[in-house]
Length: 289
Image 1 (tube, rainbow, N blue to C red):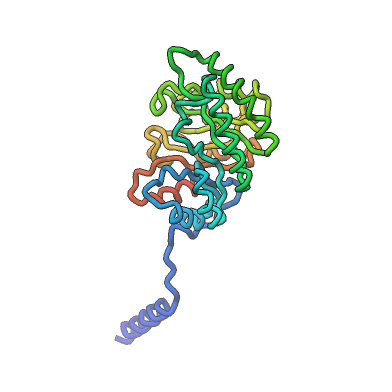
Image 2 (cartoon, one colour; image 1 turned 90 degrees about the horizontal axis):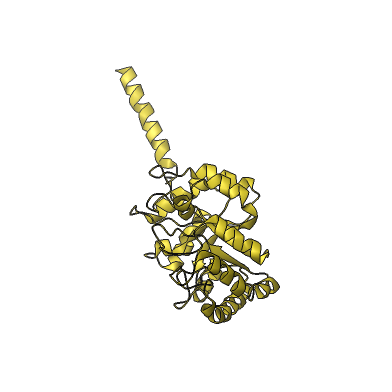
């Protein structure tokens, strides 16, 4: 009886001590990041979340920047001291399918990109996305390459003067963007060589290039001088970059760091899970090598 009573008293003391301690709830936002990778995230993958709410949430996660923000959205990022790591083309006329690979687009694109460059400089940002445009029966890859070089060579000096980078995205033409021309690393690198400017780089989208080429780490190592930005995404399906897909993202992140890359890595997967921010946090932790 005495032993039983003693045990009851001990249990009471433990419970009392526990109740006296503050309750600590593990939240989405409580793990410090290592600081080796500069994390960003593409807003369009979270369109159901208003930008201001999203900005507050990602800032708490330690994410420093948001990708693909339109000019008129800059004030919201400024309010929360978040960088726009890749400025959106912000146009209904120009975009993925209608880009630099056709000479008839050049005049309009040059005018538009001068506007984007000026607004990017005013905001203190640095990178603006651009696209090759699509193939069609009128133009082959070699002609499209020459046309891209011709058109971009007319705006790149302005970008150099303003210290702004134009970054062309590599996209897959197999599944998501049928007929897109800049769909291989080799094509994009050749364009970089033709332009020969530190202010023109490639956006190496790991999801898209896994679909088109595979061999991700070797390709990154061999072409590091031409890559100005990275995007992620789970393959197949472009969902979470977790154990359900085929890419080893920690190994890829380590390879990116080993190249000396100092820019941002943007999460661009489309969450399947109902808790989208939890999926984002998991991806950040996975890539925080």
